[in-house]
Image (tube, rainbow, N blue to C red; front, side):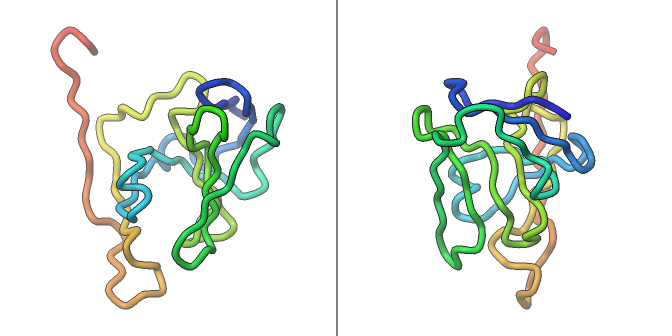
Length: 136
């Protein structure tokens, strides 16, 4: 179990990740391109709110299947229920204690197409982070 919270600390939770940070991914759907978060995977029932669930607000678009949750006080995206796999959630890696989204490489998933769509690519690329000398 790992603890997580939004920026202002109103929303707090614990989550059991399916594969630790090895599951870290970005997505190229219209929302993820704008929010720029790195998500890690957990089962949909693996998150428990320890404080402030009432401060979460929901955003849905397109088909309305995916559910994106944000703190309504500070605006930080905490997690989402996935359209591609409704049994999973994506958790904002930056919200998890002791974690950073500044990983050396992050796979970028094809979020513009659904896995059942013709033309679905699975992944579309890799983002790389290279630290400046002296900041490692």
